[in-house]
Length: 450
Ligand code: F0G
Image 1 (spheres, rainbow, N blue to C red):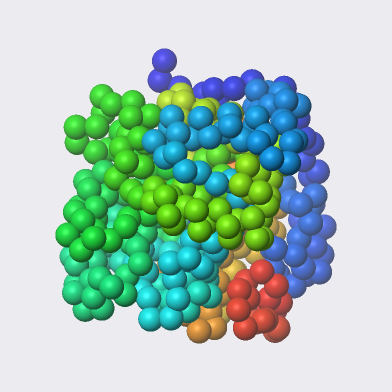
Image 2 (image 1 turned 90 degrees about the horizontal axis):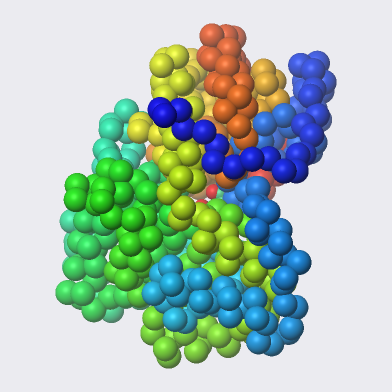
């Protein structure tokens, strides 16, 4: 059969409240044109993020009941540790409440003034934690990553030559570790190849540098490797996942993505001495080493989620459903980052409304337009998010797809709304910021139409 179906049946449903265009107009204005200020119940299709928004399976809910809530030595922790060790080969693992808690502990240990941390592209919390420690965060993406139209099978790769020259320029002593984000969220959910990971590893070995993964979307990355990388098609996703982690000395993971849970994170460290220091910091702020800020039931749901996420029927459906939306938009003449990524479709807002200059936030305009047309919540990743001090490479709107939540007809509805807005794009007006904090302004900024 050619049709790829959702490989699950729906046992429990959550109603969606339908709204009228007139209602949405009032809601949008009351939220000062900022989707972060809209109530979830006023959203028809919520594509704000793929983080913590997954639907859990019946086995995960069963695990919630089985969770062992012992303060120390919870059986749920040992079950999780076994699953993670089988999946990644790491023996030393710590649970954390989410990805940024793992980042905070890691960079408190290895960061500090004068240090430089290279990454293919730092996610904003990773950058913030590197900088909070006093270190400098440097992005080393491929040049192709900043052009929406360039098709590259592994557009998330790190620029290895740029890494070499950075190490030469600043010296290996100032680099505590090299980090690679899989998949590369900032550049469009784009994968990193095994070949690239091996090349980065070789540079690290030459200069005795540890390599860490920011591995939130490790399973989606491994599936792209299986489908796109020469010589990998006959391997299982599990084998590829194992090799990705074998190439690294540690990893931070937000389990809210490929962990298929609503809360949770992991910190993995191969070096025993560094791991022990991480344990002490974890106890200081997160909790004891066998729960790390989570309940026993959360650990149980995560152990099961990690088993399910590497199932290849799931991954085939997951990657196909995101690609399906991306291709529909491209076919309608809407420029998105090509090829579509693993967890989201990123609309190029500059080409969607070329009449709106960057200073008038074309991304925010499209975000508001999609809410008006279809009650769809999306997220600007452009000058609003990067500013006021940073510089965005592109003006994007991210349509992030929650895992196992929406069906194909929901996705068709989203595509229809995008096409309808695109047909009326000449009427769209730019935005201006009325009020905003200095940092992370996109969460709370208030806007008005120009
Ligand atoms: N690293 C990457 C690549 C991420 O995408 C995220 C979160 C984090 C780290 C931090 O994890 O939220 O559990 O603390 N990304 C979400 C998003 C928020 O919408 O892309 P966290």
